[in-house]
Length: 146
Image (cartoon, rainbow, N blue to C red; front, side):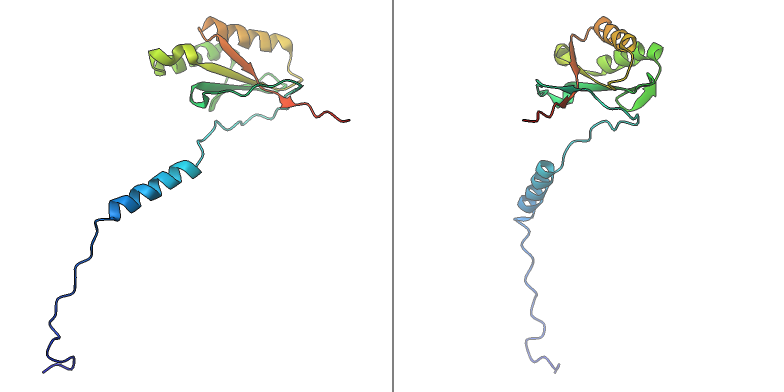
């Protein structure tokens, strides 16, 4: 006779896993809500100009960012490139976008306030020539002191 008595060979009840999928989907849903989408990190140093009237962009997924520092260096999304390579890079981005969403694409220009206007005009013309009609200029809101 064992030290646990006569009933030492009783079966251990099985674990009920019926609610396990519910818990997994709840955790997945929680992390989808609290996490934020990754934005293209800028590797160039720049100071954007201030503005008194600003409007927020709606569709973040259709926005491509062009960063320009005061030396005229250009970063499109994740890569630093020259002005001559910008049209091909924009065309490549457009070709990866579904056709029904291409007319909603936006290019956001984050340009240093000391950048020469000629560079800004060249970039603006390249974006327009690529077929993207919505160009957004990023700016810091102007702090108004009373």
